[in-house]
Image (tube, rainbow, N blue to C red; front, top):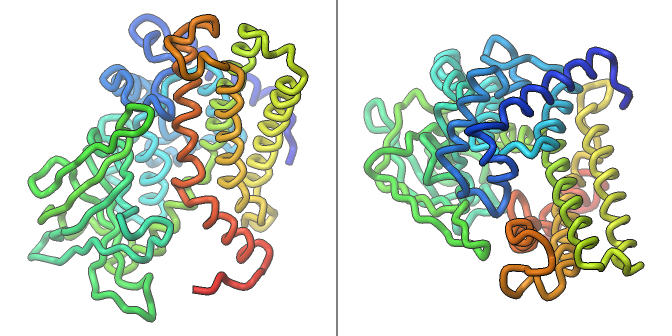
Length: 398
């Protein structure tokens, strides 16, 4: 893994930086630094306009091949783009589920017709997506899904419930895992299909889940006779498990580097708060701040070596530790933020600890990060995966 930048890479970094600095002015100045975890409901219309601005200027889907509307950037250039995006404090992306999850899945598994229909609106920022995986009885154990779909003429008819569905209130479409064949206890992954379902139709009800942050990023989604075209099944009927696992692999992609730069912005805010409150003079606090800095550097380097892969193009065991590592780190950063704020963390508008909006952002960091070790695979599940797949330990008894 060579971390040195070429002259071409530096020129590209300057291009990205210039575009973002020029764009995040005027009408878009208000979205700067908004829309991250715990702040997902902020300025929806303005951030939707930002998505379309990015699409109009060719700055969405930067890693997609050019024939599908992307830029076809190298891995190195994708990393640079996401780093600069986070460094500029550009807003949380509304289109990331379509861009980073569904789009690559369709490129890998979709039909020509599916690619032609669904990829251009994602790249343009004109259609938003959500993910219909988890259910009340099927979270980390995804093979336990009960949502079902039956073919009625040229349409699938869907019944069931999904939960923890990010952006469901806003999404135009949802990719849904549903059983299209009877459950086989001996082959739990068989008979699941990956369906593309329009959200704005009778038979779909979305109920927001209010979080401790006060936001409702997550939702319950109820399907009661919702319909989608028979052709909107990805990878073939009954072959959805393979497609779903492909989607989860794409979730660990280059955008994780941007996530880490967002963590860097948060750490910088914690350091600034420590200086304002005087807690930066406490040797124990300084040590914790130093450890947080070192932790971010380790996270970045591990992500880079993971993305670089091996000479065969496969990923090693280092890829398996990423989620467990960053979720634990982020929770500890939230706890550090509260300790740095002191009484301002829980009282009033945070007077004496800085700008009230900055104090509110650090509070959101703490509150939202409590969920980090649960969603996208709980820490218990992540440890099992590391033990079984990386270390070769026996499977946990059922």
